[in-house]
Structure formats: C-alpha cells, structure tokens
Length: 285
Image: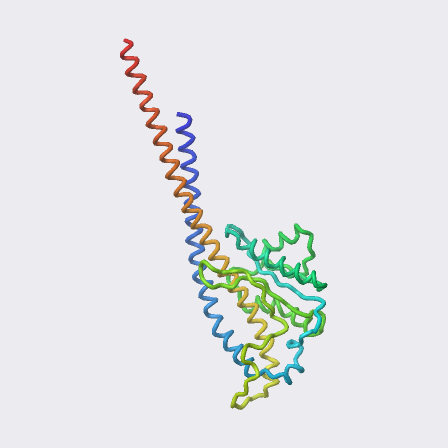
C-alpha cells in the first residue's frame, strides 16, 4: 500500500495548497474592488483638470512656464517604473519590466541618457541584477497609494525638469481597462501636453488671472497623472493576482480529481489482489 499512502500524501498536499490559493484569490478580489473604485474616483478629477488646462492654454502662455518647455533634442530623460512588491501575479511585473526596457533601448539608441526611478521590489531586484544604476528606489508605497505618494515621487523631478537638468519625465505603469485587461504603457508626464482642444477661446472671466491659475494648475496636473498611474497599476496588480490565484485553484481542483481517481484505482486493484490471494489460498487448502 506504499503507493496508496504516497497518493494520499499528495492529495493532502494539493488540498492544502488549494486552500491557500483560494484564500489569496478572495483577498485579491476584495482589494481589487477597492483599487478599481480608487481608479474610477480619480478619473473625473483628472478630466476636470485636463479640461481646465485646455481652456487656459495658449502658445503665448506656454513660453512663460518651464513645465511646458519642449526641448528640440532631448539629451536626458527620467523613467519612473511602477512595479509591485510581491509576485504570484502571473506576468504582471515581467510585462512592466519588458515595457521599460524597450523604452530604454529605444532612447539609448537615439543617444538619450536614461535615469531610472523605480517603485516596487520586483523592478528594483531586476535592474539590480542587471547592474543598472537606479537613481531612486521606493518600496514603501502600499496597496493604497495617495496623492502624497505621487507628490513625493514627482516633485523633485519637476524641479529638475524646470531647471533644464531633465528634458522629459516618463512613467511606466498599467492602463487599467478591465479585470482581464491592464496592458503596460509608458506615458510622458513632463513636459505637460495640453489636452485635445487646447487653446479654444471661452467666454468667461478669470479671477485671479490665467497665468496665476496655470501656475498652480500645472504641478497639480503632473501629480495627478502620477497618482492615476499608481492607482491603475495597483488595480492591475490585484486583478493579475486574482486571475493567477483563480487559475491555480482551478488547476489544483483538476489535479485532485486525477489523484483521487488514481488512488481509487490503486485501492481497488489492491483489494482485488487480496481477494484473489484469499480465494487462491482457500482453494489450495
């Protein structure tokens, strides 16, 4: 019955694993709901900011604000890569890293220096393994990103961009579209790109002046873009982990069916053999 005992041990092990993956799936589902609510709540504010910026923007005003500066030939850019601190989420982190590397290779091929800023242990560990220099690294941003987190990531980069030290700032994260679709993407947050329809004349009065409003609006617009990237990347991570844990639970269920069928077959064969031995012994007597 050695084989039977071995199969029973494997069945117990798979059952324990299935309990863990099912629990992780339930936790990820709960966190995914909160994360997607955060994404949905951020979008109206971002749309309002973009609409206001589009109404205030004019080519004349653009000459006055460093955050709108567009270098003719960029020489140095900063890339903010957003990854997770944990795994067990399928190819989520690998896809983000692949996207960041593709953009880096593209810029370096054009002679543009790339400065890396990474959020998340998975991205940090990968680029450390490659021996790449990492300007800043953060692992303290939780699964509930805040506007303060976004400001702490991008404020220093805004200052350096305004001074001319950097020619552009990009963010690599996920674009959350649904629980099954959150593709990686790289977006430019600096220089600020006015939304479609910018420069359209509106019939309204401004108090204070458009210049003062734009001066306060541009940093808020950049911080909001980074906050949205954090929120959407977190939603993408929770969705990916939920999917991965659901697949693991389903695979464990399928494996249990095969193992139990194999165990029952082996047990039946042993019983049949024992009956045959008893009958054979009785006939011999």
